Image (cartoon, rainbow, N blue to C red; front, side):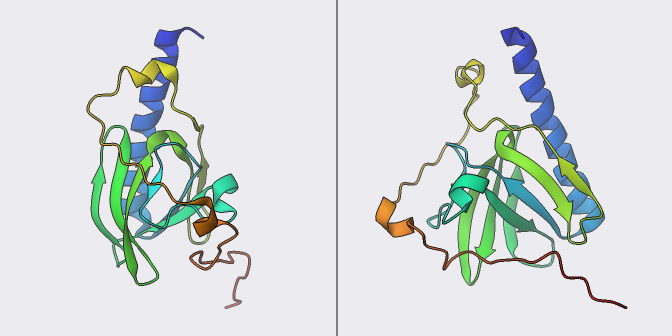
Length: 158
């Protein structure tokens, strides 16, 4: 695949992921987004902990709390999300968004991801807001205290 086609594919995919985000926000109220580890993924001071460093993080989005200051841009999502009682600034590049799904998993959308920034776009970046946070390895090593475990497998009978 030549560079121009790759560039167009990446830009089209970002637009599509943003459109899907808008659709899930409008139609489902609360939904989930899974983001894979990426050099530009920022989860506030918390960062990725435990298994999230390998499998990514599932984030909850919904209009009934837990989200404030939501801003969707061409290259990333910015939001303040609540983790327990702490609000964290989150920057999610569209390139690392793997999946959207609703609570009942009736709708599940899997998408192509780029876990590293493609070289072709490094010079293309148009003033993208970049934030990097670094944590010492000892601070997050096997720390699962900040991770909320959600079991979607159990269903109640009505």
